[in-house]
Image 1 (cartoon, rainbow, N blue to C red):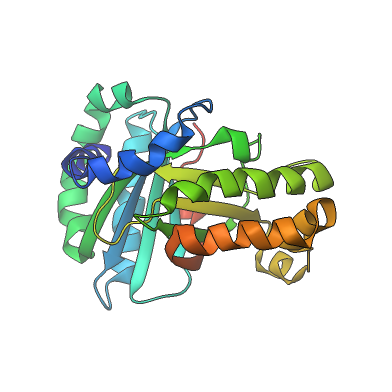
Image 2 (cartoon, helix red, strand yellow):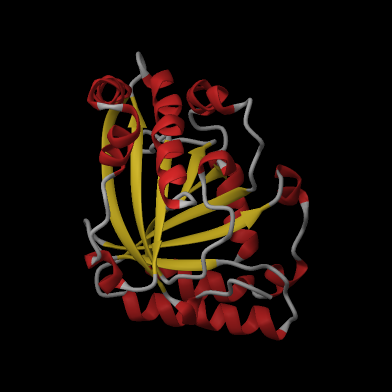
Length: 255
C-alpha cells in the first residue's frame, strides 16, 4: 500500500505547483520542517467495514514482513461522505525515491481488498511550519483541523498575520496551541494552509479558552487587532473546519 500511495503522491505533485509556490515563498526565511504526505479516501456508500478490514489486512501483512513505514489513519467526523485521511511524515523529498520492497509484497492486498471500496483518492504534500507550531509531536487521538484558501490578490498578508497573532498566544500561554502546515501541491479544491489543534478526546473541546484575537488585543490594543483582522479578511478567500478521530487499528504511528 505504501507503493500505491507513493504513486499517488508523484501523480499529484505537478498539479498547481506554481500556485502553491507563490504562497509558500513568503515562508522561506523560516526553518524548514518535515514533509507530510496527506491521502484522502472517500469511501463508497456501504463499504466502510470492507475498507477497514482491507487496511487492517494490509497492515498485518506489512508488519509480518518487518516493514518500517509508519502512518496514521484519521476518520473525518463531519462533512459530505465517509472520508478517511492517511498521513505519513517524510524528512525530505528524497524519501520518495526509496523503493519499499515490503510494500510491494503486500500490494495485492491493496488491489483486492482496499481499492474496490474507494470512490475517490487524492494525495498532496504539506510541510510543517515549525516557527509557528508546537515543538513536540502530538500523540492525541482527536484533532480539529482548520483549512485556509488564500486570496490571489492579498494572500501574502496571511502568514505575517498568523506569525504576529500567534506570538502573543505563545507569550501568554508558554507555547503554541497546534501545528501549521503549508501545502506544497494543490488541486482545484485544495487549501494553501491548514492548522491542526490536538485534543485528548472530544470532551476536551468543551473547555473554553480565551480567543486568539482577545489575547492579541490584551497585549497590543484594539486598534492593532482591528488592523490585523482586516488583513485576515483580505487574505483569505475561503476557510473550513473538520474534526478527525484516529483509528488506531488502521494506523501504525511508531515502529
